[in-house]
Image (cartoon, rainbow, N blue to C red; front, side, top):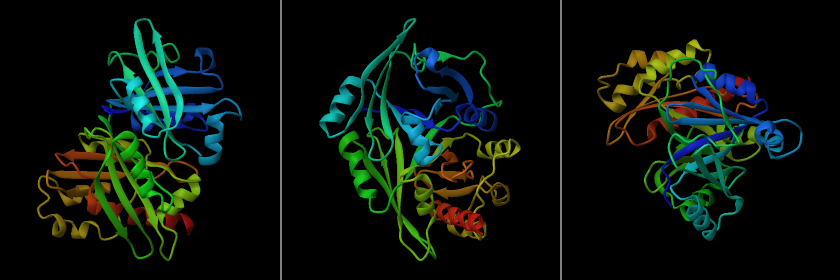
Length: 357
């Protein structure tokens, strides 16, 4: 089971036109392809967006029936498909079924004008799926013959991100170990990190699973009951079950990315109270970074055995306050900011409390 990367994340949304406009003009993605009934996608409209090596697909239904409309009714805008690149779709698909996966789409070849892409899809452990994607050449189109290239598609300007770093899930209580088990058994992932968080009112248990080569990484978390509903329970309630909580994009210069996102109207989560006052005591010297610029941008910082990690999180742009995004800069760091997991949890609880007041 060899996976080279996350090929794309497909979002099922209420309005693909508006969603693609947001990702292009706020996040700096560029539209590169589109599909619809006229190209062989009945009942849906879909746009492919790229930035560096990161690719998003936004899809909306053109009516009230079908899987896209049903997903949006149940969950609002959210991630339906996390597609994984593999050198042999037929072999990977057959092996996944042998290990207990449920087939959604048999291997299908998409070919047009010398381009060839093979795709198959299995069900995930929740209301999401995983497609397997095999490309003959890196320059092959998205799904040739079904999606058509968009010449000079809309873009918000200079790129901010180089790739997709990880995709994080919020899971119903008492499903974390079974979900981790699915990825270990069916896709051959391994658990790489574990973190348990407790706050004054609630908490969570977290695991991280990654592919054998470490190129695909999924942090997963489930709530721990406390005296109040925590931010994970709020997400699960609004989303209508387990699902992708956030997508993390890798940036070479997080300060520039944050400044640009703010100029484009994207709001960020505030760091929890007291976070920066204890930063030097927790990490030692911050060089070459300075506390004041980090604090002004709500950038969180952590170290691991390999290097420094910088993170910032957006507020959810969705009516249900569900899916949000992370910007991450890695200076050789390989982890996920163990201390910052607690900080993120506290920051999300602050946001939830403000929304309820």
